[in-house]
Image (cartoon, rainbow, N blue to C red):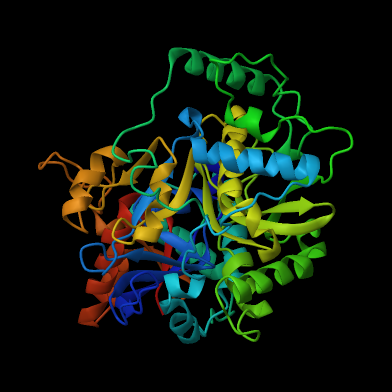
Length: 522
């Protein structure tokens, strides 16, 4: 991964201090606290490493909650799709969709089983203020292209990757400055609500799996490896199971897998047809551009009906900024997924029109869910739950070609907010320890969270953050058209506050990212 990712460096602009703003969960006017940076460009490996340290993106703004100070601590949560088994409530949602597609049946009862997450701007309310501050007097988008060309040229000249030594890096920065000439370099998936007492699964216990189920899963994964077709090729019709999921004679004691339930055959005279299309959103593909207006209209209706936004609030600009713009560079290595890495929209087409869109990032080790919006007329289909299950199945499918891609990141788990605890129902799953950045099974974390909002999940008192910044002098700085290690940069600085800002950034991103990403300082 490093060899091809290193050719296009991430460029970030860190904002000193911490931002306080209104919490989208408990509505505390100034209780939510986070650190943030603007990502002008970012490699998928850098973003993978950042979310494994508790960061998250909203558009091009990348933020990290101050976990021991914020009013509602937000723990990064990931599901393990390879071991995932749908629960009874998950199966009900899938069967409801199949009945609707096959016969047009609309289930009666309460359709509001998808919890409402806060709107994007509530979740990171500081975005709007920050974006206004970010009328940065530099054009780093163009600069990023120049830097990429410079790095590419250097690679060809040397025939190898640049060394990490200080002298080499300074020389490299001089070469890039020369090439730049006189040009001035001028920021959730919805799933079911927590079950009512006595009616749901015990969240403190992992789901049981029989040996027979595990054998069946292994056989299915082997079949998928032999024929990794389907959603990656653009779209997949519901009720037309791809060859990697051949129909099997099911036994009463052998539960159906997630794929069996999703791709169950429909009758020839089915009432409806559902297709799922994966389109690259950044840079926008031709399919994305062709469907932009239709997709935006679905988003606008969703915000107005579900989140009660006034008609003038969900603008094209807001939609583009938060759900279409992405700092992630599109990367297509030969050993990666067929669609490549980067940012995508997973569109749900019902009878030729978009009814829902899942915004996702495909990263080296995971599919990361960013947001979901849908046509409120189809709330009865529990599209929040349905899309999450489709994304889990999609992750399993990507895993067949790219074996290290084996996790589904669901954003943040907020135990202190009742309507946000539903993510814990997708088992098995893990929470990220906010101090040592190791993954801990959620059932081991829940007892501690019942006693305290903020918890260190790693039970080893001696354990430390292994990825912490150990040598900040090696941090890469982009300053005055030159790339240099922080050890060189700090000798040129007289502002006493500059060192504190850079060291805070280094502590939060970790040593590996600090050495790869370029920290822009004006």
